[in-house]
Length: 192
Image (cartoon, rainbow, N blue to C red; front, side, top):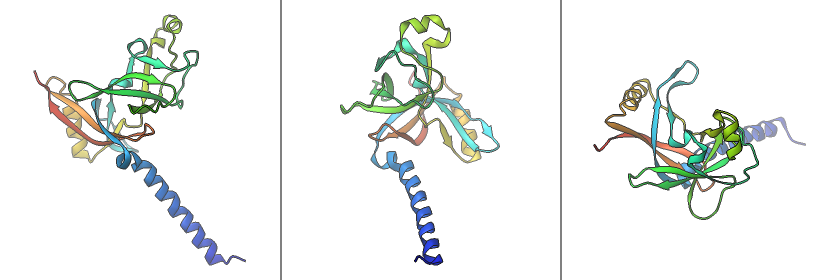
């Protein structure tokens, strides 16, 4: 018969395993992923509960559906929580850009970022004509927030708004399953 001490030890070990699992899941893209450079845009909102962070947008965050290819079931309507995969392709300027979306993760060696729509998305020409916003999509990939101390967050906010001379970018590590994590947020001078 298990003693009270053994039960407590098992519960403590179980809690440690849960925390370790959360850590491994969070850092899996950092350790196993491929680094890509994404153009980043945004602002620095303050939130009493979340602290100082920069809210970041990317090229795939909002776009016209007819501007990218879709590989999947065009009769489906995708909602928040449905996972799609944005195929990223290197551009001449060194940044990666979403060039297509896939319903299922293809295994052909390309780089894909797992995203979910924030509005209902359907890739059919008829729905794009029926509703004003139906032709546009908004996506999140879980890499939209970058936490920083108050001074760094203020600096990021100022630099993100200098779009005439600076380009913000995020170095993102993307795991083989499409999950991404921000490794670094930085800026570079735009070549005129």
